[in-house]
Image 1 (cartoon, helix red, strand yellow):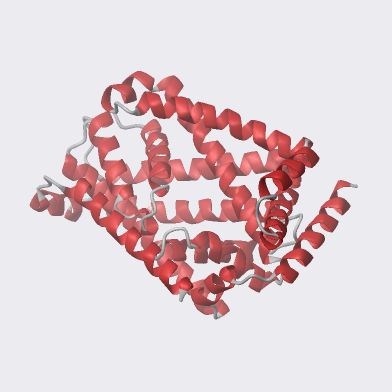
Image 2 (tube, rainbow, N blue to C red; image 1 turned 120 degrees about the horizontal axis):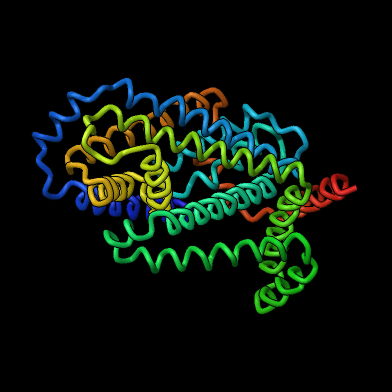
Amino acid sequence: MAYRLRTLTNFFIGIALTGIFLFIAFRGTDFAELWYIIQNVNAWWVLTAFPLLMVSHYVRAWRWQLLLVPVKNRVGRGNAFSSLLMGYLANNIIPRSGEIVRPYTLGKIENISKASTFGSVFLERMIDLISLLICLGFIFLFFQRTVADQFAWWNTLSIIAIVITVLFIASIGLLLYRRELIFRLVKIVLSPFSERIQQKGREVFHSFVDGMMIIRQRSNLLLIVALTVTMWIFYIFAAYLPLFAFDLADTPVNIMTGFVLTVVTSLSVIVPTPGATGSFHTFTVETLTRLYGLQREVALGYATLTHAVGYFSVIFVGLFYLLRYNLRFRDFIQQVETDNNKDNTVAVRSSISKQNELSK
């Protein structure tokens, strides 16, 4: 019952936020003009986003495979890719559920520790956040005046991003090279709680830190950075090329527009709406109209079509893998709620053992 209540609550909150952001995005729109623009776009340019997004997902799966080395040395890249897409499919229905579905589907397919796999997803999200903050810093350096003129909150956001980036890098350094100190601090933080919660907290933290140890090896760190940069490049072109579907001859649109849109839409994903529906539209429209002077209906046409390509491509490919592996989301989400200390303890010990072997 508690599981269903949490799921329904997350679902309806996501739907409510979607409605709010869609209202903001579409208010004051000439829908006849919008429909005319959508009917007359060059669909092939819009569809270029599909292969670019699929390749970027594959690169992400490759990076995830590398992060999983402490858990299992040879996780199938295809299995990582399929789990990733099933996780994205879940996000398109219930926000944030993909972070639960991904490790449990991969754990089922590869027969590996689900707890340690979850730690790798958390680490991946940290890498994504750091790379996003770095990109925000780049915009701060090269587009500060233009963006700040249009968005009053930009200066505050930039300062917060810089501070968080520094803190994240420092925290990762401590976790990698002063782990015993951090473990002692974790014990102190958990001490007021029950023994069961303390044990659970220590297990999760150990799994997470052991997963991070993979980046201590220089070759792995360089490959992780290279894959992250490659992923961003594909995202940028997936945002940029569909712009050619519209008549933008008299606008200052260029490849850097794709970069700015990628950063902005990455921020929209933070909002817990299903598949970033609504938040993607609002953030994209505000960026294209304020920074690049596009007609509102053109910006909405771009946002609607590119979001549809990304959303439905994940739906179709994710469903393909879901049927292929005969999996159900409900089973895996319910397992997250199950307290299985024995499995988690074995997972932690196995993760530590594998990491020690890698460190020799």
